[in-house]
Image 1 (tube, rainbow, N blue to C red):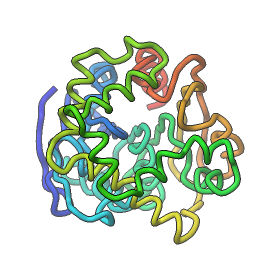
Image 2 (tube, rainbow, N blue to C red):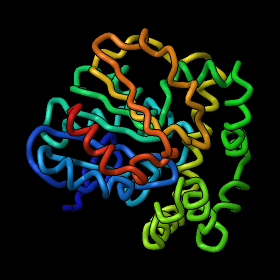
Image 3 (tube, rainbow, N blue to C red):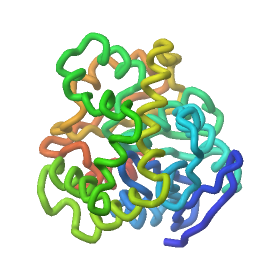
Image 4 (cartoon, rainbow, N blue to C red):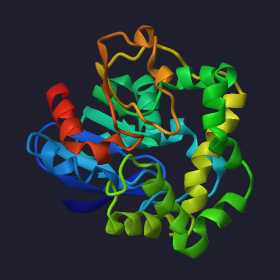
Length: 281
C-alpha cells in the first residue's frame, strides 16, 4: 500500500492506496483509521484502485477545532472532493460505522459522484433518528452518544495510560479476542492519542447530537445500488434497525446478514466480507 496526502476542502487528508481500475473508497469509523481496511485492501486491489483515507480528525489527517467541523455533511463533502482530487468523476464507496454514516450522507448530497454504495453496520440516518426517539432498547444501547456530549471529560478518560481504553473497548466488544492483534490495538491507541484526535473523534457524536435536535435527517431515496452488510451480534446497534428500509432506495437494495459477527464484521469475517464486496462491486 502506498501512502499519500491531498488537500481537500482546505484540509490535508492522509490515505493509503493500492491497485488499478475503477476507484473504490473505503471509509472507516470510530475509533479507527484506514488501518481497519487492511484485510480488505489487498483483495479489492486485485480488481480496483482502492483508496482508504483517514477521515478528517483521525490518524494523520488534519483535525479542525470546532464541533461544527465534524457535521456528517462536511465530512461527506470531503469525500466528494477527494474523488475529484484523485482524478475520478465517480467512485464506489464502502463505509463502516461512522464511515457508513458519511457514505449515507454522500449518497444523498452528491449522488452524481457515486456508482455503488456498500455500508457495514451503520443504519440509515433516518432509521437511526427515529429509533433514538421511540426504541427504548436502542436508546439504552446508545448511552455513549449522550456520554460524548460532556465537555473534556470523555477525552480525559479515554486518553489515560496512552489510550488503553480504546484497545480494551475494541477487544472487549469483538466476537473473539483474537480479532485484533496486540499490534492492531497499539496502532489504534497511538492514532487516538495524537494531539487533537480524541476530541475530533468525539466531536462526530457531538455534531450529530446537535443536528438531531434540529430535526430528522433527509429520507430522500438513495439513487445508487446499495448493499448493507450487517454483523448480527452488534453490541451498539440492534438488528431491527435494518428492517423496513426498502422505501429509502430508488435502484436496488439488499441486506446480507452475518451471524456470529459483531459490529467489527470486516475485521472478524474478512473473507466473507471481501467476497460480498467483490461480487457486489
